[in-house]
Amino acid sequence: MATTETPNNGGAAPPQSQCRYTLASGSQCRRWAVRGREHCPEHARWLAIRGTGPVEIPLIEDPASIALVLSQTARALACGQIPPANGRAIISACRVAQAALTHTLAEAKFRLKLRQLGIPASDFFPEAATPPQPSAPPSVQPATESTIQ
Image 1 (tube, one colour):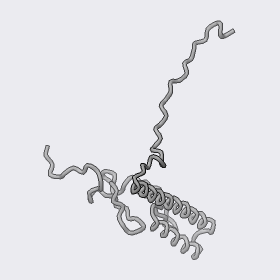
Image 2: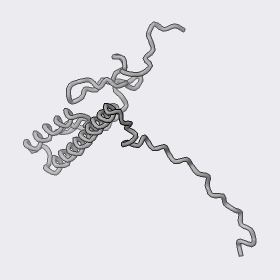
Image 3: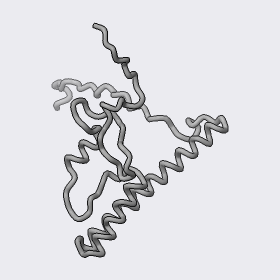
Image 4: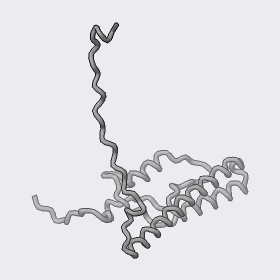
């Protein structure tokens, strides 16, 4: 069985298999889409559970999506479309997302500096912990007449 296409053994998805989700920055996701679907697993899940309302909250995954959510929240608050408590909660979520992105960026910069200096990252970042090996359950001794009395 010969095919004319060359197999893709990893890396970027071919255009016909890319996720069609448009990020807040305007670019396409480009991760592998679920076979027979238009979106990757993450965006398919997000599209299935998102709600409709005055503030369209995309999956907060990059600085552009955080800026989009903040601007829509400010507009909705100014127009009185959402209660102030909801606006505060959305802004708080954006702060948490921004802090997580900042931490991820700082860690990536640190790992790059370690690599440039020739220091193994394992000295600072323990590799993924291996799951504990299951231990044998304690042996249960059958009750004898001497232990019952």
